Length: 261
Image 1 (tube, rainbow, N blue to C red):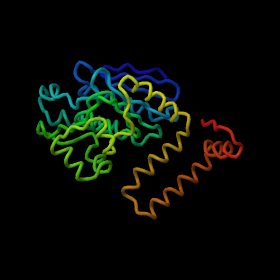
Image 2 (image 1 turned 30 degrees about the vertical axis):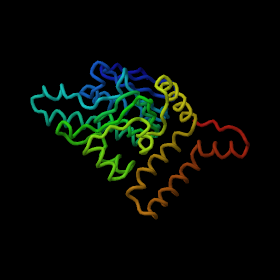
Image 3 (image 1 turned 120 degrees about the horizontal axis):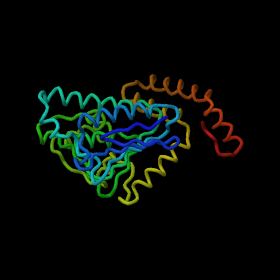
Image 4 (image 1 turned 90 degrees about the vertical axis):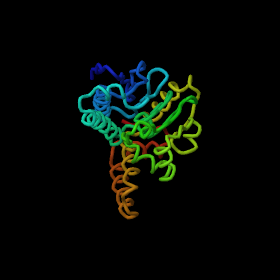
């Protein structure tokens, strides 16, 4: 497949690993309508059996400083314009959440507002030691978007979510890891290599198994115990009958490394 040409992001596909870079460094990778529209398109491109891992990072010093307030301010109807930006961002996040591929966010610098929301929406979150995290919405009279009000209470609990959103407290990368927002903190000059290594590790596994894990974890917050166990039974039966499932079991019994599709 020919790689698309984007204005506000870059997209690369290497084997089963896709890499998306927020690419407006002169604007702190702020999200305008072009970026979120392109991000939604790139996310859809990743929702294929051929993609098993997606690395999402930012160009320059920032991961993403949130919404591009300058572009918001020039819109004739600010509410309608911001709604369109949010809708596209939400489509991207929904695609990332529902695809089988594992989303690895590599937070290379400040993640604020929608940048914070997008960063912690990753299945695995890597952060450079210099990265910081702040909500920043109420500071400019706005309210959260980008799935923050969904993910934060689940990741850190209601009280800490309230503190982050209402006080705009800034967390360092280490604090974000301690709070459960970040999977791993690495030195800044090692972030890209660590993200690539992790993506390759994930891509060597079974895409269908990873997709089942993602679905089960999302459903666990709304299902009863019995509903969740029924979903587990359905998924494990489907996986057992799949080519990857058969290969995995056969490889284990033969004491060899599995070769997943």
